[in-house]
Length: 298
Image (cartoon, rainbow, N blue to C red; front, top):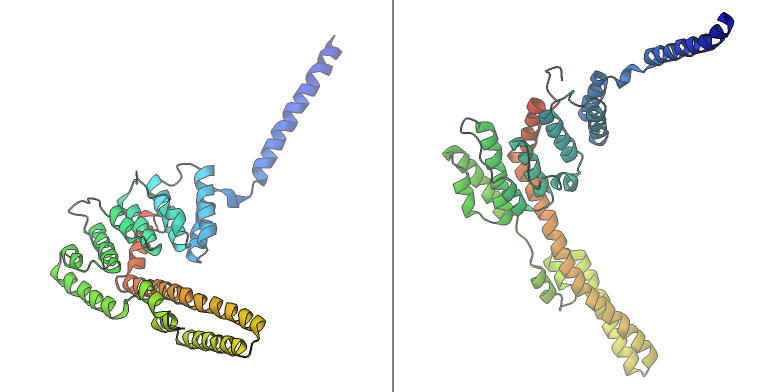
């Protein structure tokens, strides 16, 4: 009877010992890079090297594996910082509908809308109140209001946004710069001028393309006339159709060139204004103080 009991109990004891040993072995063999501290360190390193996509992935993994290791403000701020600096402006803008937990998040949202050329939405997201003592967020907000006003051509609103007289003079200098370098070409005018072959291209600043378009259309017109004049109707029909196609294309091309010119000028103007107002410095400040970019251990 004792032998029978031993035969039943011993396998059970053996299984428990093996399971415990396996568990201890797996814990001892667990790689140290999966600790929350090392994941956080990796995330910071990736962000510092400019690899914001992977930094975002590591941040999400850290929050998934170890929820609460970094608080909600640090998680939200860092995530917005990585999305913006990684050029994922549309992804960031899609998170800015409502219910933002942190006013500094609105700064990232406003910058994302501006990067997408959606300046009205940037103004909407900046319509929030901040504490009178919180002058930092107030200054950041004013900068972005002025950027959107200038890009929208609402120059009269710039003075009212800049409360500080010293700042007002500085921002009015940016207004003067925008007037000199931010002129746009009218696609409608480009279309009308395109009636003259190549005129739309020349108006939009694409002089070489305009000259080439004028030569091609003029040459095809001459060849069409000559073919019909010499009774080569088949050739005349073919060349005439090709010439008509190129002529219509030159008009449409002039309109598209005007729109492209406007986009490029607006992008350059926005980048210049952003640099002068140091919007990147604002975002770096937020990331360092409220994200994981600080030196507080987390």
